[in-house]
Image 1 (spheres, helix red, strand yellow):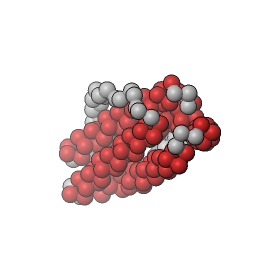
Image 2 (cartoon, helix red, strand yellow; image 1 turned 135 degrees about the vertical axis):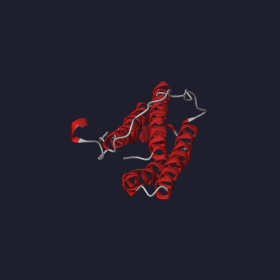
Image 3 (cartoon, helix red, strand yellow; image 1 turned 45 degrees about the vertical axis):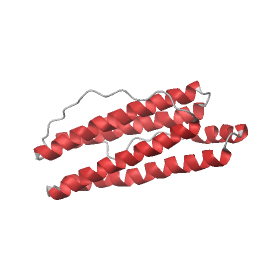
Length: 174
């Protein structure tokens, strides 16, 4: 059984993951409006992954006889100054999510909830990958600058990204 403190924190993280999904869907819309369908596709995959993250936490709370409490999702930005600014915002957001996951992990340590700590390890590893991916795209955009062909090629590369459901979802959800 989950302690109330941890249950509340996990519910807050579900909300944060759903906000992240909504943010990435907004970023996808921005990319499509800018004529960058590949980048839009990349953010659509991000959107689905964030939904998966929320569902992993949802399933975990239920598996521990907890109560899932869904809250309203706040508005997200809809405009950015440039593609570089968009991906810098992505990196900043992922760093914020990393901090939130680390705080959750610290709480589980303080509360001696080792089962939840074990589940959160997957999220910690995922955040390392998320930050690295955003940083790589930023580095590429800085190198490309305003080179149209470079942006075209990066858009094509990012558009090839495939969605694969998070490993932690139960078989019933797949």
